[in-house]
Length: 607
Image 1 (spheres, helix red, strand yellow):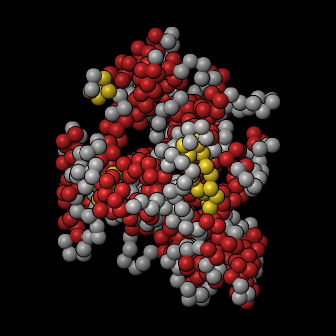
Image 2 (cartoon, one colour):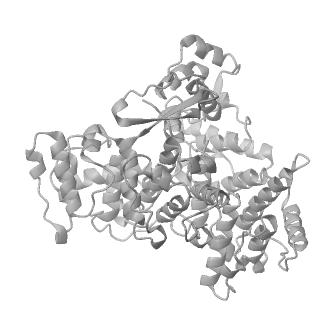
């Protein structure tokens, strides 16, 4: 295979990191590179490994190695995709310097994402004349150039993430300066991170340049998050019916969307008497039999009936096309084309099924039961963990952190090198003694927290393993430490009172009337101090005519959403939500000011 997007590379890397430690051994390097499409002679692999005396290679180090072996100072290609028919090759480089890099991308994915963007955004008045995007050539990547579509797609997946009033729009002649485009793309990237995208080795300039493999990788993450967002008990209580007799609701919350969707498909197949069992969205769906029965099962009465006539066709491509005609009859044809079903394209088939579920869940009444709903704080922490590349992705904090591995990965992110992976117990965990091994990992995580200086009174490994709410206290302190680590003065991490003092001094120096006594100050609810600080750090960015008097909750929300959007636009990586500001959540407000302050530090250092 050929892995090009960071997400695909990470998936490939994780195959050689079964423990989820975030590292692979030097013994696995050659195989990992081969899996990513880079065939490197054994003697060269050994030369590379000699530089890693501890025998361990982190993901960031692997990315650098992969990039080095991909790049050659001539026209020869070091990456040869196995499936040439499905890949488009793009050469980027400097002819004079004779330096070229070859990347590939999936034409099928490009077409699917074009269709989805056109479908979801075509009615947006600000995109008139831009949409629909043409399927041919690099029209998609040119359309993404100014950052407007990427921001709007983020909002489509997670509403209210971006205040679209803050977007830089082209003038009457369709012109937009490169500086304004850079701001839009910076906002897009920081908004992607805020919703839990793993953005690595992607900068605003990459999106401006329309680098296909990076654009498609980011688009997939945004689209996937939106598609999977409603596969929850809150949105579909009937999911409870997918549990086995001895499974709990907490276990359902911890399941991956793929696993839930497989169970949903099998549930629907059973309803219509189909004996097939789906375990994946690749080989198990290639003959279209599953999809034919699934559409019969979920078809609403006012749009049916849908029959099984496609199964009378022996040619799989034609059968798939007939199945998709049935999907179109209920307005559910999306993402896949006939060849994508026959070839078993995992991403696109997953997206097709997820969209079908969102439109027609067709689940029976689950009766009365207490729905476990993710809190706003839990969602924010989960997005933060996923943005750092937690493997596998965290779906439900209290279940996914029970073995301690994700927590230890995050410790290695917030304080690189602090985890001794030789002390970590790795899966698979046996039924006998496996629980103790997981608790040992959790105890190790608590010990690391105490070494860093976290306040963890009354918390031990058992609390983490049992899914205790105290888990959130540890995760919050990790997030806080990570945020404050961006702010150092003379090698020391700044404290809350120093952040408050710095912000108030800047406000005063900038001639602003706003100030605040602390992160619990009620006056912060109107977002004025945040907006004023942004204006001091990056003069001219704030449009004060968009700020309301904050006379009611709705107006306060508008101010907060605008403040967060503008902070991201100038480069601040903020995870807080507008409600955190309007309700004056001191913990999250601290992170807002700290992230803006880090941008201020960066600008001062550039002078």
